[in-house]
View 1: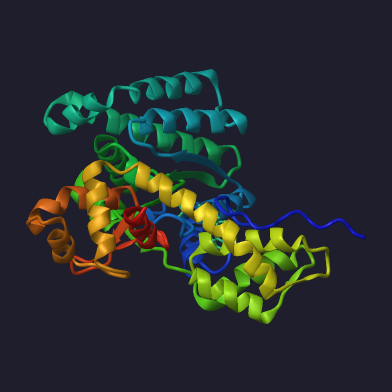
View 2 (view 1 turned 135 degrees about the vertical axis):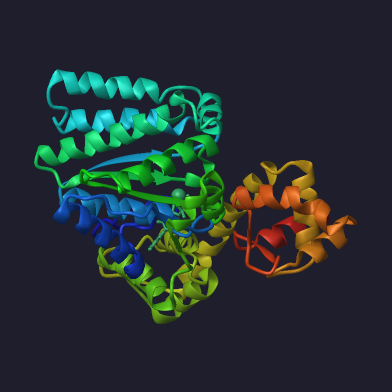
Length: 388
Ligand SMILES: Nc1ncnc2c1ncn2[C@@H]1O[C@H](COP(=O)(O)OP(=O)(O)OP(=O)(O)O)[C@@H](O)[C@H]1O
Ligand SMILES: [Mg+2]
């Protein structure tokens, strides 16, 4: 018997087959084309935003692969709280240039190193400097970043590359002071007389547009693009094409079971694809059945449960009280008033935990003061804690 192919589904990692996202990929391609054709900056800042698990990182990784084939040099930084963005970005830019032998003469290398060190000033200092715009020192980090990105992008081009491409993932977690420096530098480069073959593509949780606008008012002119759940045909394609590449197909009722359960959520599709595959251990030519799906579901539940538990554990007592109140108010979208009433508090007094849970990606606003859980089954999980 032929050995069964390895499980091609990738819950938590970039997918083998990126389904849908046609419009989003076109937006990226437009930017890249402008940089590579005209050697100029492709502004405004591109910002993809969505709750956890909807495919932001996967989209950016696909763009990175595409850009590499077009001759771009890419750097990638995942922002994190309590971690400095600008020094890391500078280090990575220098590293990427060195790898591509695009650093040029030693003088340039030293200059870039100097800029990297300048960008290493503590976050507090950056923020203080931004607060005192009139002094000469004010623009130091902005100028340093402008010069670093401009110089690096031109060096790439001078060495035959298409341009420099910067990916910033988890942008919502960036320090506001550093974000302000980045936005200012980007704005200045956009208006610079010399063309800069550079593009910056970013992604973050739904709070990202707000964080950007708060960091610099002109940040509101960025291109904000929300990522939605996958459309039904794309969800099917994610399952079918991924299995097909291994010579395995899906029975129609099995597909329906998984797509009904996942409701277009990319992580859930990968998770259920993965557990179905493991239950079936299909050889090439095999068909995944509804029975395989059902036998896989408990494993998917265990995994989801672990994720629910992790999110619950990362919440403070006040946030947990908020989550309990929200879960008790029912499934779907919950109003601020419902949550406040269940907590026995004034509706203005619940803003803090609400904001922090949105920042953590546990809940998301859906307009008109309504919120909902971002991970399926989280409400039921919280209610089950109560019964335990
Ligand atoms: N277009 C897609 N087609 C198929 N699978 C996808 C697609 N987008 C994402 N996935 C799958 O969904 C899961 C989540 O994707 P990803 O990590 O990119 O999401 P994210 O939005 O970056 O989440 P987080 O906010 O937690 O970082 C992964 O398992 C990935 O393989
Ligand atoms: Mg991600």
